[in-house]
Image 1 (tube, rainbow, N blue to C red):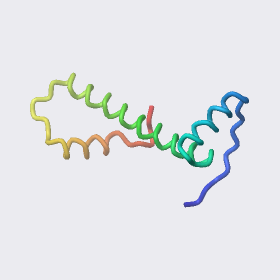
Image 2 (cartoon, one colour):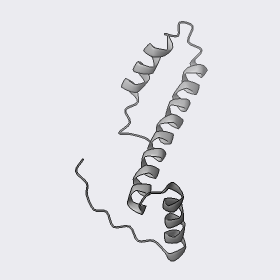
Image 3 (cartoon, rainbow, N blue to C red):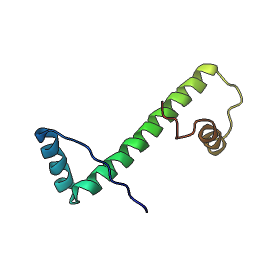
Image 4 (tube, rainbow, N blue to C red):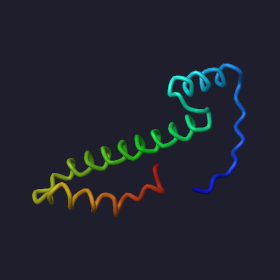
Length: 84
């Protein structure tokens, strides 16, 4: 994996909280940040899928495909690159 440097400026309190989170996870701060980004990304995708499912439910579709097919269709329609 190729990594890039990112500079983020934090006030003293946020830096303390970040260090505490990293220590609690038993990892360096940089790894804790990567983990939290991955977790936030997964959560954003989950919330987006829930919104899509609610939207589908409002449409009152009579012939709903099986869960695996529906999941593939949703992933094809709602690409992760656009999480808005």
